[in-house]
Each structure stands twice: as C-alpha cells, then as structure tokens.
Image 1 (cartoon, rainbow, N blue to C red):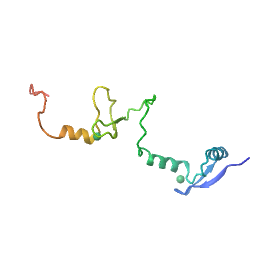
Image 2: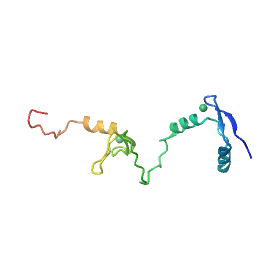
Image 3: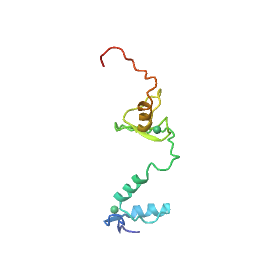
Image 4: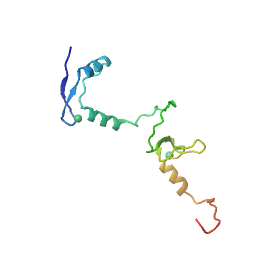
Amino acid sequence: MTGDLQLTCSDCGQEFTFTAADQAFFRERGYAAPKRCKACRQAKKMDQGGGGGGYGGGGGGYRSAQTQGTTVICAGCGQQTTVPFEPRGDRPVFCRSCYQAQSGGGGRDSRRPRGGGRY
Ligand SMILES: [Zn+2]
Ligand SMILES: [Zn+2]
C-alpha cells in the first residue's frame, strides 16, 4: 500500500498532494508523476486547448446551457469562432472578421429597404 505523496509544483512552487489513488491511476496509464499542482495543470490545459484541429465534434449531445455563446465554424474562413447567439441552421455563421469584411466591405448594391424616413 502506498500513501499520499507531497509534491512541489514546478510552476507555482506550492506543495500539493499526490494521493495514493492518483498514483495508482497514473501508474496504470503509464504517466509520470505530475510536476504541477492541479490548478497549474488546469491552467496549462486551457492554454493548449483549441489548438490542434481534428476535433470535429461528432454531434454528440454537447449542448451546454451556457448563454455565453455558441461555438461554430465560420462559413467564410472555416475557423472555429464563438457567436453570442444560437445560430439557426438556415443561414451561415461568420466569425467576426469575416462578418466585418462582409458587411463593412464594398458598398456595392446595398440592398437596404430605404423606405420611410423612420428607423
Ligand atoms: Zn502550481
Ligand atoms: Zn471567418
């Protein structure tokens, strides 16, 4: 039986507990002992997140109840972006720069119903 280990985080220098359960878990997976505390590890993870491609969601029921925004793929450049609304399927969603390029771009044929003087 192994006990808990006190390790020192290489990032923030704080001591953190590497519990026996965690040790078993790490050994099972073939991981080396962690060098960072949980908080720093999580910060690191957030840092790296969103990098590599190939993470095209398979459409699993990942529907967060957050109203922060929805992650979508820009119809213009194909990059992942976040929009502050829930896109409907019937119109393409653009990232901010593509959207601005579209609406702010050339002033050709602005089809704006310029009817009455009211807004
Ligand atoms: Zn730390
Ligand atoms: Zn775009």
